[in-house]
Length: 494
Image (cartoon, rainbow, N blue to C red; front, side, top):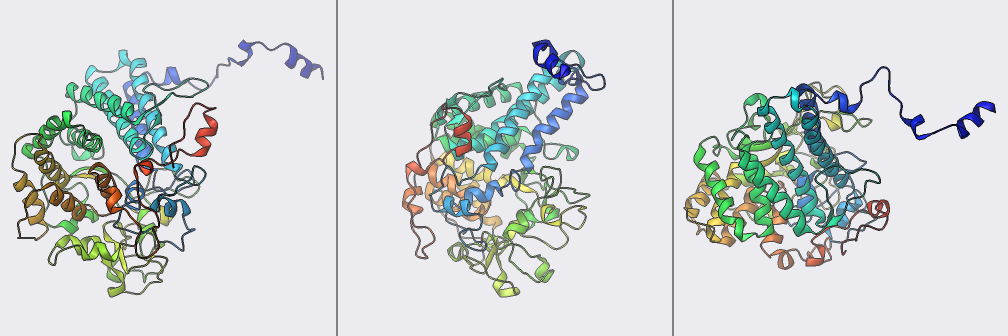
């Protein structure tokens, strides 16, 4: 009792200021180049998390495409990953929505900001070259994480330096988010410290070409015509540099041997070699669960070189039918499971599955933890074919001069199509659809082109019952975030 009395009456603020006799504090630890590099690696880590973490499956490509018109949600029924089905029908609720990606992206923002702070602490022990390079990488990563948040939620709690207690950021409009991030990317590019292409030992790190693609993606989504000429010049620079090109075989892009091919501008790495990612530790480095999610249920293992899955995201029949005969992208995109093997059809089954990221036999053979989570399929983010189509579209939209027709022809000819179609805006957008099914591009293309409201309408199957409208452009902010913000966040319309 005497001890308790002393504890309750004798404490001052200094009582809480305890120095550990055995451990370094954060401000003394991050004072060397090697340790700042550790922090930089940590800033890359959240790139791998969205497929499964924070109690949710949120692979970003799929979260985008279920709101478009190429794939269904699938699963056991419309209550399986229910918030996916709500997103598909434009009826997400603050209490039943995508929360995991929100947390993952802000984790990436926080870690990216940390790198910049630690560079200041370690400045005396770092070369100027490393300071500038790590700073550039951290800023591009921060922009990439904010790009996720900006497109899905728009009006964000926004900060460029990490918060202090009570850790509440001002909410800014989507336009303000864009203006700040795009200006920051321009400053990074002015530094001219990023390589056009990474060395093989650095595959996965930010490059100038990746930054050009991110910049152009944001500018085009914002329809920022004042920056179209700059974006076009960036696309031309990638095209003319010679570091990147189309591969001959479209299907090879998504095989293990196709990772980091000459077509790949940026991928998020996943591995099965000694991969220890587990259900108990989903943010541990390793593989991805995406192939298990989207492969046919109860598939006979090894048939056609494919493995079984949980039956999510069947490809629509209409998607298969939109490809011209002879278009090599059709079979590389739409795996006709019903024609080559047996499986247990699930909700919204069509017989077609997204072959780009399907579970392939042996692709998780070397993992050492949970096989479901450790497939080695890298997520392709930016490819050279998108560079060509970006350039073609920007030229057609008046950004500058160039051979839009030639850029479009190159993409079509690689797909085995000899017929030439005119390089019109509609044709280029349709070519993007054919090229990028399942890669998370279509939904955003429909919004930025003004075609969403006329395209994303109720279907004849009764799965989608609502029509997309401008009020559905942004998802509702998770209610847990609204509550934690103590009245400082305004909810998006839903």
